[in-house]
Image (cartoon, rainbow, N blue to C red; front, side, top):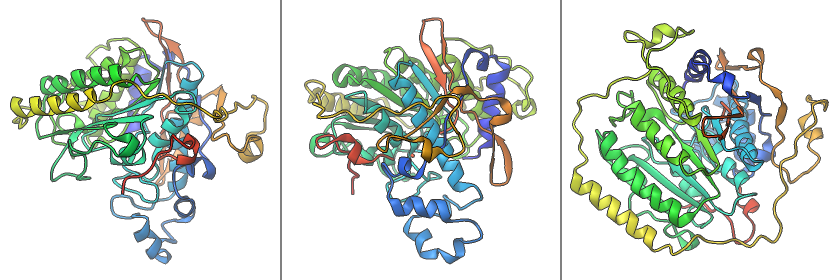
Length: 444
């Protein structure tokens, strides 16, 4: 999950002229109480306090919270979590206030659990963003096209009918080992979890033969007020840790299709470990969000040498074997469409009292003390939407490396008239915010 890939993405967005079509915004970092809407207090306290120098004195806590190995401790860890979480929630806030599309390519960390880090994910920004959306929308749809199962998000909402989760992923002897087609939710959430287990080598045609009919039925039956799409790029052909064979156009077709429903859409990043292709993919998908087709020949940019020898936006998929047979794909599609047919209509929710909206600070308010600016104790985030993010303000330090992270809150109108915000930064939900009949519970 190298932050370098976000900087490369930003460079491409700038050189293709896409940043000029978006209003880049800087969200405030998420605070402890924002993160604790979903995560346990002691887990967040641990993330805030642990450092590379002190971790040897906290061995029991490291083991308890699954920090280490694939979720290592590094300088600036908590600041990193605050930043990408704040951006994803900020994108949700913008959608709640009338925007059509928001983007945070550094978000999408879908494995984090309530009390546990997992799979390079420390806090679950996706769950927090969904909780924010639930303040205004009766139903929220989560779609995950990362190669890994979106287990953290599914677990958080496994027993609610207000959030439907749909994950397309490699299944079998593969991390995290969950996401069987038979995992469908529990209690009120039965049939509101959909899992599409796939095998190695799936190509664009096979992928879309499942994605489009399944998502068309989901949109018809569930009728979400907002959609969160996790665009993990490790499902691309040639990814260092992946085993799928999707082209960038095939991956982006999912973005284009979900955009076509004209429902408020939050685009998030996720996995992706061949970083030059991650940057290519997210740049192209930003163009898709804006309704623009980008030229394949890549403009000269800060990282131009990384994209050789072809220096093009698109790369050809490989000739690897597609182990997904037509028979298996048909069975999966039939099974999931049958499950969806058991949901006769979209569930309704009667609010006793709607949670308060996130408040927007005035431009002249003191930005040094965020907690004192936060007058409403029930409001989860305060975002500075008045100040565009200048280049000098985009730099943060992670693991001692100077990194440009985009909190691109871009508001513009594309060729179809859709307003787009990009927020390049990117934690799991708190059940209390959903009300008595709307709680999100973790699956155990």
